[in-house]
Image (cartoon, rainbow, N blue to C red; front, side, top):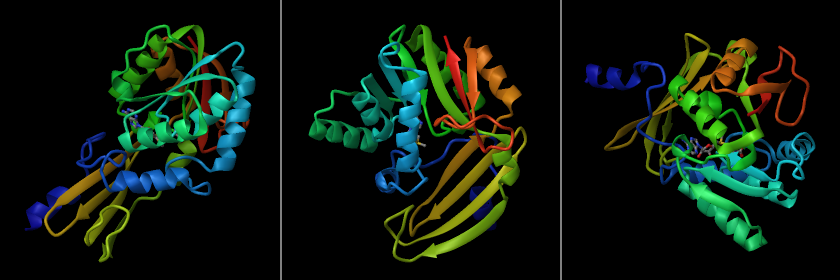
Length: 276
Ligand SMILES: C[S@@+](CC[C@H](N)C(=O)[O-])C[C@H]1O[C@@H](n2cnc3c(N)ncnc32)[C@H](O)[C@@H]1O
């Protein structure tokens, strides 16, 4: 029994995949969609007031008159995509969460917005010279393994026209330094966020070398044990620049976030504007 349980609770090797996808599991993806749609929650999307400021600022730095065709990578339920469309862009949103894409499509239909939503793994997208600009928002880049970060940058680079722009954000070393290692457990007798059934939750937050963090959740129900690993790589300016330059991008400008705050070393995020 000890060996069985210890196997589930041990720290996995860096970037080990989850048994359960928070974006596509039938129950958890419902909770994530609710989090996206809650205007005051920072769990899945940032707060609505931030999103509105962000779109207003993006319109200034990549105006739709010069950069009409926009790809929103990891678009979720379309909170940015709808606002980009209303600001005058031709918008394509890609995301592999079928629950989010279904919501995004039905919301666009209801509001009469002509947005192209694609339900696909962005690591497999194969656009070529198609978009004038791209956004990849809420630090999803850092959730990927080193190899997959290379792959997504290559895919976006290929999908942009020459001179096209990419804006994305990552967590900085400030975030890594503030991250607290903890281990906790909770009994959820009436179900909850992670499962509709009664379950026991064992959570661990761990720091790994090279500024990687893991939020590991083990969900134990009557007849199953599943684990969610949420990885995050935090970046120094140097480590971020190294990766984007390897993919062929030219740095245009740095910011503190995707709503145009100034870049300073004490901020928890870094946003970077790049050019193909
Ligand atoms: C943190 S959320 C951010 C959503 C949106 N950018 C926002 O800020 O409102 C990350 C999104 O990326 C999507 N995602 C994660 N990995 C993906 C992959 N490999 N392919 C496509 N979408 C992915 C998730 O489904 C989720 O909608």
